[in-house]
Image 1 (cartoon, rainbow, N blue to C red):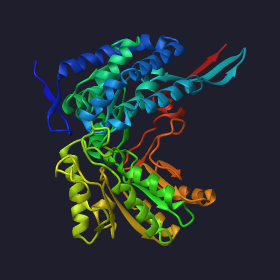
Image 2 (image 1 turned 45 degrees about the vertical axis):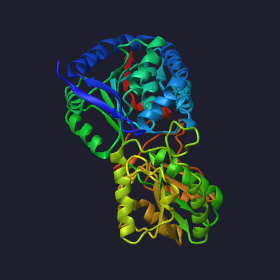
Image 3 (image 1 turned 90 degrees about the vertical axis):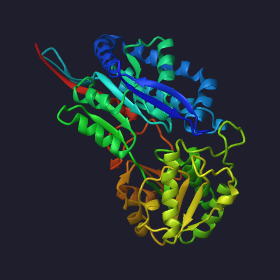
Image 4 (image 1 turned 120 degrees about the horizontal axis):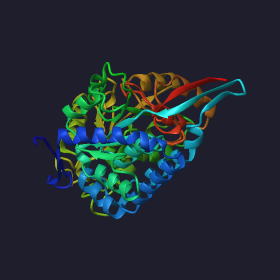
Length: 459
């Protein structure tokens, strides 16, 4: 049987950490099994499906000691930050808690003459294509509500985090979720496209690159299969003249640099009112200069390598191009001797940047951020909206009414005020423009994973 070899190259030392074969026949068989199992799973009581999902999440939490070093080896996150179970548990628990209300029928009439209502019914087989940067949390956003709603799920994980899907499936199976209800699959691009185009699945949830999202939509063209996407981002922040500048610097620098800058809603560009510009830069530089770049398996490391050399190469190219065009690097790379020109990359804060530079326009997804001085809300708003992406934006002010006025005009999926880089499971996770479209978590997350079915009964 022919297939494609999938290989995870560890950013820790460049070694091959894991290999798996993507076998087209195995992928098709998993889709058929999920299709056959879905009606039976959907007829189980909602409470039973919910309890089994929560048991799977709890079992996953028991694996933390194994998961944390695996993540360090696969994608470079320092072990000092632990795994992702806190976020996984928070999101799954919230979605389980609202399931009954979110999936409840809308009752229009229940009389002796008529019974009229709108039910929410599962879509069928949901394909979740998850990314490597927060591999457990991004997957659980869809896996948990999809299963609770009565769908069966195929999970295809990124090659960089090859073992995560296996780990999740094992935890759920050990907790009692049937193997054909939730299956981890190894798929190459052609097989993934073929499954979608052939309607082997009923919905797709994809988190990844803009190009990847376009490929998913092309595969689904004409099938009417819904494709929910969270793609690129260039999330901005605006620090106003009435902001707590020290707190803003602390949160925004962390939002830009945590996980080596590899966060979907990480801060990628910062606009600071002239009144606070110098103070903000001083605070930001002090924070970054305190980081320790190194082996993620070392408890002292606060900044690990990027997940792959090619990702680091993009960041280096953006930074070098900005410097060549007149920008200034605030951070001396010599402070980070572990920078090896490969996956280990020194962090950088750039000033003197403009929107003619890729560092302020294209997704960086690494530990580098540009900072610009602004004089007014109007200037900041125009710059924040000057992007082909729209996932989150962060405003810093003591005036909520002012923030509300700006938020109404920001072209983005989520607006934060006095915080950043956080996913609230009670709120809809969504984007606009080239970030894609979809509705994750919240009540709307359930609506995206089910369809309305109207019933009109006459006596």
